[in-house]
Length: 345
Length: 291
Ligand SMILES: Nc1ncnc2c1ncn2[C@@H]1O[C@H](COP(=O)(O)OP(=O)(O)OP(=O)(O)O)[C@@H](O)[C@H]1O
Ligand SMILES: [Mg+2]
Image 1 (cartoon, rainbow over the protein chains, first blue to last red):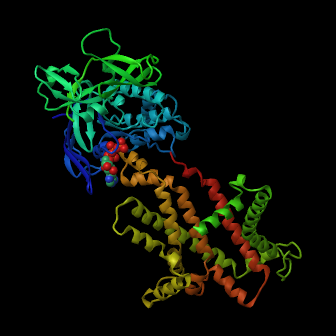
Image 2 (image 1 turned 180 degrees about the vertical axis):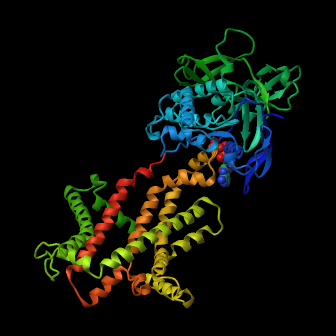
């Protein structure tokens, strides 16, 4: 059995089905993200695992032990909250030592050693006597990590821990969480609605939508073969076009005479929705196959990249290009669709 | 609607907000009115205290204000008077006991209402604050009838007084505890339990310290209410268990002297010292900070 084995987990609040029969296996040492829009049941799932939500049905087995029915304090899991939930009336030391005091029987000296060790690991050496309220956002984040890491939990649970940070700090903390995982190899479940975090951090991503498991696969697989419109749109941006499948392995845009050769993998897909990622559209390519003419409809400069909307036939396509804007509204351009695929509507 | 408009004009006048739309004299008049009312409110609170302390300093039997001289005669008389025992051996212990019991009960009830899913939550809240709604004399009467049943005759009067005072103070300790518990983020409790604390340990180490200021205000309110109550005490007091307010009440029926003012001044001083001391020791603000 996998290290974490979740079977048909279900939670309803009256008529609301927060989590709908989700099953999930996680191997020891794996980093799994739960990705989904707001209200998709991510927190409900995580809190069921941590023991703060009573599931309506299902089972959660961690390291061979059934968790359902165990109070939270008897599950050896570390939970990192979105709003951190550090104890404001305690010093950094007391926050970090809190778990040691309850979970382990240590002398004061041993405790000091363990706390110092873990503060070193999260790059906060010597912060023991600092007051929680006087720490910066990033420092508080590290204390929240240290507080659970010091207990060497079987399972680390993160509930959008970075969503309250500014962009730069978020990037930095994301890298640090990744480093920590690479070093400590604690099995982790990371809840987020940020696809970038999910894709860069995880070994596997669980995509949730309205409480249902849509997809559970490694990030690259999800990105390259989203399979459904929801995933294609949620994991990276996508352009969608209704197509008709022709003979000899081509798809033709509805209302247009644009035809593209179909990928082998899509040959027997029972769908007529094509997705094209913005970065898979090249503007003004050197001549070649699959080149179509279009008109620039809008230009948005986003710093390192520029976002264009280009009308090709009857459809508008979002595309991005590196660098400053080179085309302006009304320009005639050609485009080439480098890559695309079929998804379920 | 009309009422709302009038209110907003008045509040504009009083506070001088939105003053851009008003002429300078109007703003001045508004400010003057505002500070005038503020001054009035403060003096209504402070003036009686000043007068009481002033009267207590009179050197003679006269209750003149301003005092005809300055002396501590009535404070000396207090020590030998019939007020001394009720003050320190009846009212004070009853107030401390009442405040302690009422605070503990208030916290327990508030915890259950706020943090547990109990049926009839609104009804429970109503029940606990009902002593606020029922006229005090009715409560006192009801308590007198109930507590004076023969089979309760073995209960000392002071214990009955504590019961009566707990009844009238519980709305305050309950409400302050409720607000205080609600101000503690449930995720802090979850955080503690995730780190291995049981429900009770999490309450003791997280919720309780963080709701400290609410607990203290509740305790102080209960203490002061019990210490100054004359109504319930009047109905329940007997013999050696007469509380200070009742003793003063009886005294005033036949005599008048600055002794009463001196006693009242000591009462005020005691409460003042208590408030300042607790504020210093624990701090009202310190516990209220949230993460
Ligand atoms: N205690 C509750 N009572 C009733 N409904 C609830 C409760 N908790 C969650 N829900 C509902 O369950 C659904 C899933 O909620 P959940 O908090 O798990 O979503 P989420 O994916 O974490 O969303 P977000 O990204 O906004 O945090 C939502 O529709 C929510 O309204
Ligand atoms: Mg959530």
